[in-house]
Length: 381
Ligand code: SF4
Image (cartoon, rainbow, N blue to C red; front, side, top):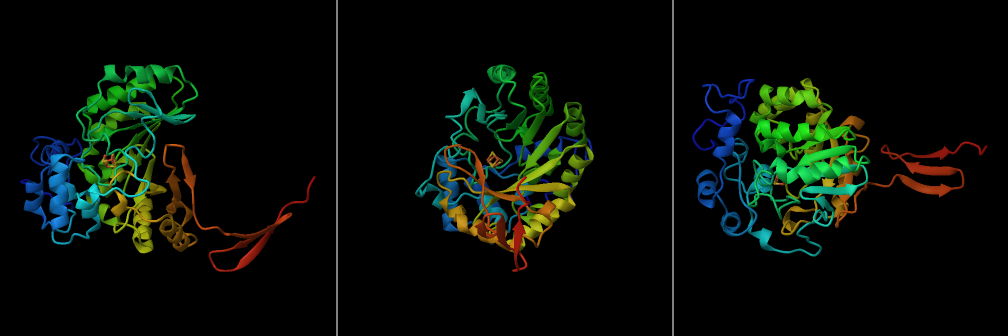
């Protein structure tokens, strides 16, 4: 299908390296943001909505978590299939109004862990800066649905100054994640200003950009952006591909540009019902990412954000999927399955248990080949 106005096929619209479109007008990524679908009426023009989607979109427009889909990402959606895995991620559904046991408005306890305005610290050596509440698309499973798309918009440098000051006073924090919202929706100048300010904090060693833009707005990965960020390395990109359909030629080009410009790219997929809760789908996704030099880092059990029960899977599903993938995919293609524990108390790894017996000095394992073997500890000194 076509997005509104401009040709939007993921296969053919390749931006120039400087980010301008083929006719040298507004950069394609800005055009995409300006023409994102944001209303139920527009959505119905592009997709054959089922009743549950129409009601969900109307609710999102009225008083819920807002709706936004870039024309590019919209072009990946199957117009007639409500079970399309791209569609399930971004088209609101009436089930979002249902509250499931354990649902939380703020699943990771970020408000409780806020140490300065829009600075969250949940681990001793890491902190999270929320530089904006705007995203290119609003993912229906978002853990920050309480705040993204809200009234605040881009955070000013003045607003973030207490966060920078707090980091300067806490040299134990060495790794800062710039997130939001999506930091790559900021203008290049604004993003660079935030990064430059963080780089002035001598104890900050690594800066990570947490972004879904390479997935939903790959036109943003321009030579202009990468050149502006290059002086601030080491900068890592934490991106968020959930389905192999998202690895379009344009998205692969964006990942290639990031890797060529020296950005280590790590991917965090969220395990989602009806999207990627299938071993073959995950294997194709993880292998595709590795081919693009993006490391599958985490497979995240979906956070219990309010109204996401219809998109989440039981813990046992992820464990069973890892059982199918372990030993069949290369280690560089296999992410860790983790649960970010409700309340913000940190991630814990989960997965199949390969230890079947322990006695003093001997551990017995089952292997992916189904063979049982023993490992003998060295003799005590
Ligand atoms: S891009 Fe990230 S922050 Fe924005 S809605 Fe999607 S998951 Fe949430």
